[in-house]
Length: 289
Image 1 (cartoon, helix red, strand yellow):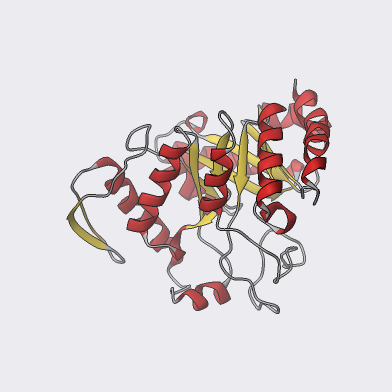
Image 2 (cartoon, helix red, strand yellow):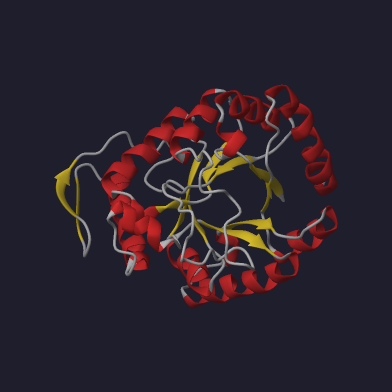
């Protein structure tokens, strides 16, 4: 089981000198992948419920710096050589799929084929309203946008007709380095998210999941895979725990987890990043070994 790090793009983790220090230290200390999430908009008093906390509130202050994840990961790619990169997650229905197909492929090329596109449907109605995107139907929009992007990555020229997007005989380049199937990971803990991962994606990312709940979530994923003639071991399974300790690693691996994602906040001083990352590595990576 690999260990990834979700620590960049927000607050102190949005500062370029911190990104550089954390990314290079994470690569040096054996982390497999850097994850970076997305919100274009936060509001001071949201009516929408955040689904990854018991109190329904996101812990990030509304006035915190929050970088665009594709740009933050491009910066991280430029200062590293081996560590993989993933959006965890990008809110796909908020984006134009033609533009995003080009942006994702560009990051994959610039990183030397290290990028995976983690996607989610979003939860904040206020964010969708600010962007002028209907909140209702975002799941269907997500599925269609992914199909349209895969057409653009696979075909040249590419055509697509759907409920939300249409293009005819267009060329969008570059293509992803690894061919038409840039790895796509679906984030979300609901049965619907697991079904989407099983039917459309190359992996699942469970976020802020209780360690004891992980086997049950993977069982649902396996059932959905079987229902659609897939083997669950065809998918990568990454989880970020809400309450885990290194003592949980063996059970998580036995349940089928392929990557544990450590979520933490980096220190504000870049000079402290190596010590901080080294301690995380001793806690999680050495425990896994």
